[in-house]
Length: 128
Image (cartoon, rainbow, N blue to C red; front, top):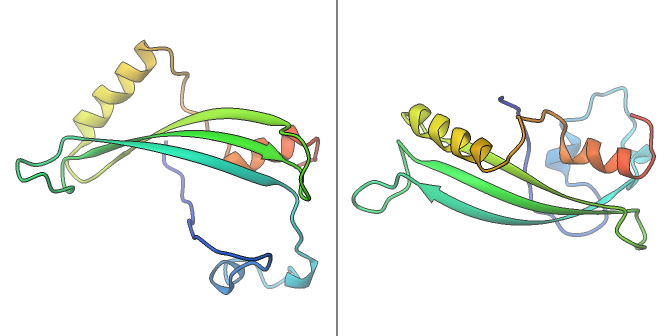
């Protein structure tokens, strides 16, 4: 499964201009407000490094995310889940297929297209 995503580290309570530029013009940025707080811890394992140890073509990264969901303003954790992602560089299709097969053998479920954000909204009882 392939899904586009935007990743940006930011501080503060105002959405960064780089992300605001992705919102359709029909949406008033002033109407935006926090609806969920996601805290994630990511562990990364890189497989298939070249002989020189450089990351590049032929490598696969396995990301193991542990995510906690809270309502804005604090409060208890309302949901906690893990998500595994397998990302490949050019030429690593076979390695990525083998890694995914081993993860399924170890108990990982089928690919899930629901984003962390949507899972958080559902956990908070919000309609999406």
